[in-house]
Image 1: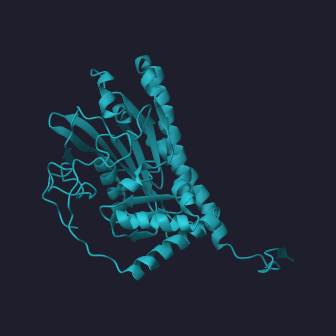
Image 2 (image 1 turned 45 degrees about the vertical axis):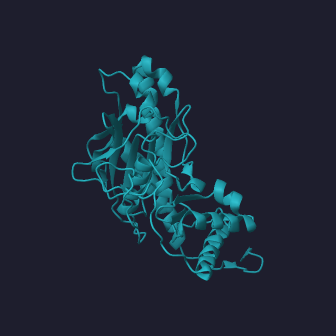
Image 3 (image 1 turned 180 degrees about the vertical axis):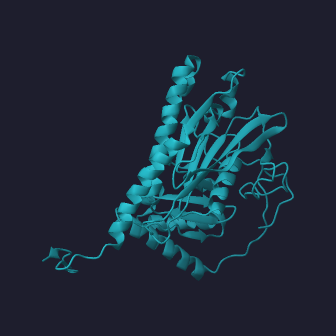
Length: 361
């Protein structure tokens, strides 16, 4: 995609379009972002861009090709609507010709009475800068069980901080988990569904989000980090990513491994700086690794509210790797049970009548 010469979102990178994410961090793990402390953070869900820009003509897609693409998306959405309880672990990705094409897709979904389901019940990511629409149809047991366990660990630590630091109790009370509700507004050009987020009372965008990659690639998680911490640079101050090795062959003896990365955004004199605080730290290799991850409490607080935090002491959320491992092993156990059901042969003497879907001896 052509780079614009107008001032874009980044300071230390070649200027880019507001909805185009740059390359991953440099070796020092830092990125510099512009920041205007006098401007209110984006609370209406619009993209956190500095200016609009011209990205050049990409060429129009043939109408028939677009129609076929829309038909495939609609078929996927309808299938998910009709079989909500059936497993579908696919993450189909489509490339559309920008925001106008996405708006046409929404109109088509409305014609098929699927728009409400698409907007309220289906998880998906959209980026008008790249034209990428990713459908998150359903996640596997290991992902869901671990995600719920991680959320509980974070909540417990927030509770501990409120007890250990009474002066921070009113701040902790403003922080709450909001599951994987959407960040951003698709009609404004960008929207993602992180696996989890902690919001702060009075703010639309969450200060802290986390994504868990299981079947996803490292590139997918890197894209998630770039989009959350750049498009919402003035709102999202921290992000945790966790990668879990994928048992593609459903091998019951598969050795799971898992590692994590942590990113934080801070205000400096000339803007914002994004730091990679932890980089691919292994916490599980068939068993719990020794150690723990320490997450600065300030990452759960909006940038414009951090001035109320004590400067003399760094308040930390501490999660032991042993606790993370226990949650992961719960997910592994559940995943292996589900995998065993998928490959189990049909017991002899039991037939499925395709006409009335009843089981007969």
